[in-house]
Image (cartoon, rainbow, N blue to C red):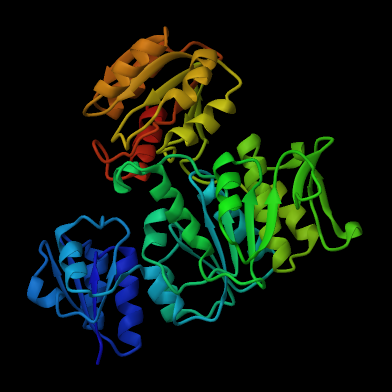
Length: 447
């Protein structure tokens, strides 16, 4: 009996344990932190061995294979010890894919991947397909493979998940864009992060498809030096002979094999507005075309989709000021998209755990649209230092969400927008970006 050890006892890890048990593995789960009661009950109910608040080497280093939570870095001592013993370390996605024949639409990118994943899933569900939603969203992929029989999966894949994938193959892969992010996990080398994203294409054949933003400079450069086997389906705002989705005369077009079957709809009818969401809509529409979704379903879905929580989410209007929760903007490029969509004077909230950020990308938009910056974090030194040299707007520092919202309320004028789009991870003050967004919304609603 093969021994499978799982590092990390969250949704991903517990799902993997359930799937591994089903297929006859000797399963052991280990987590350095305390397990959530829900997951502990699930493991105990199923008789799956586990430990919490420690990693016992004797119970881990005897594994035939290890599935690692994407949140655990390769430089973690236990991971290093496993590598030294040449024990394979893979991701949940890699493991679960061995036990399903479902078609997989896989989506990555520095920005927009959650929205595009949810939108693609929404379109397929509206067509009535038997489809699962997993990866960084939805229930654990492994858990679903263990207990459901889906014909399709739409998977949002982070670079951390892709790092642990080797034999996995996407039927449809999507890279929306690549901008510097998570560089602290990649030795502060952008190329390492790029290489991680491109793992989504590994093992694809000419029968598979690759959807990508044609105007992304990083993707353009990488495409010139890589031998990509999959069929290329680029999208862009401008129409060219190569683009399979584009905007022309304010209409979004998603091409079909036959011109008369092209899906065409006015951009103004898209449920999600803003340039970045036009890109997301094109990518989702192309993915849907590849699995033969009717153009009527695609058009209707693009007009009705309600968006993703914590991504440019309208919270409330208070004293004539709009409050927008964009807590999911954990990198600079995400904030760029948010600022680009702002139509009113803005109070911008930045801060959190810096990941090697270069704020020059948003400097022009801050100067153009922002009259007040609020830095919210345990350590705001880098933010204060950069913006003091590059911006003349008012600046304030806070160390709690309550003080942040109170200060925003104080400095905002009727007609303004208060935008939480932090550019940073949330772990200094919050459990995760969802917790940050929820606390922001609660404070705004208490004004």
